[in-house]
Every structure is written in C-alpha cells, then in structure tokens.
Length: 104
Image (cartoon, rainbow, N blue to C red; front, side):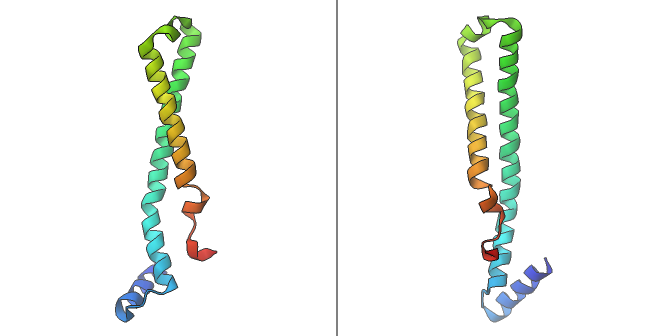
C-alpha cells in the first residue's frame, strides 16, 4: 500500500502517471471486483442449494410434485440463476480479473 501512496504523490506532484501509479489505480479498482465475485458465488451456491432441496423433495415425496407447474417454475428459475451466477463468476472474476495487468 505504501507503493500506492508514493505513486499517487508522484502522479500528483509531477502530473505523470507512471507504471507504478497506474498499477495502484488498477488494484484499487479491482477491490470491488473481488467482493462482487464473492457475492455472485454465494448467490449461485444458494440457488444451487434450492434446486438440490427441490430435487430431494421430489425423491422423498414422490413424483406428484414434478407435475405442479409452480414447483417446476421455481425449480427451473433457481437452476437458471445458479447457472448464470456460475457463468458470471467464471468469466468476470477468474484468474484474468484477479491479476495485475502490469505484472506480465
């Protein structure tokens, strides 16, 4: 963090956005991305658990539940949201989003 403070002073005093200053601003912008990824993963897990509970309920209570439109709709919506959260977590917050582009 001291590098970021020093880099911002350099950028402020000399009006030159050097590599260190740019790397610090990239790191600051990435902090919300990490918490957003955690939120998306948590949401995906919650929806996947709902789908699992529905499947277990059908197994336990019988197939009559699988014929109810509202039960099927809620299960399909939860499955879709879980898949969407998984896809977002893999595409946006993967290894490419967590690393500093200047470290290459």
